[in-house]
Image (cartoon, rainbow, N blue to C red):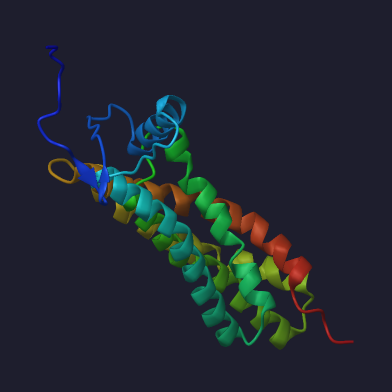
Length: 228
């Protein structure tokens, strides 16, 4: 007779025999999942597959849904702006501010201050609507100047950016200072509030800075030409 170890129970996952590996990540959830995925691909025998459970499964599913949510948010805002301005050019100019603000919002993630999770994803989607307000202020005023004074696109957008500078900065300052309580929060749930506040504050600040310089240039290139 020989003795050998046998499992006390056979675990199953989605009606397949499985082995459960669990642990507490010391890094962000995204980095931990990428590491485990790489190890599984290198070490797992042929014919084996791997899946996720618990918080990691939720993270993977929500991460793939972010792009769909992001695209739907952009499409809805574009259609609403197109109906408001009765043009497809002006919404394109306004939505130029979105990638600029997103780049600013991703800086804390690259610096390691935060990680890509459900809370930062909510902040990114919220940022789309917030930053679009700056473009609406400038583009709408520039169109009105062209209609009333017959200015060229460049002259109109320069005056609009100068005149609407104060409202744009006040909107940004109000939103950034409104995020300070979330950033400095302590206690239960402080990390989630910090993630949302940091993404929105940095996205609004850097997005506004670039909006004041980049949006007028794009408006000059894409604005409806003057009637001759």
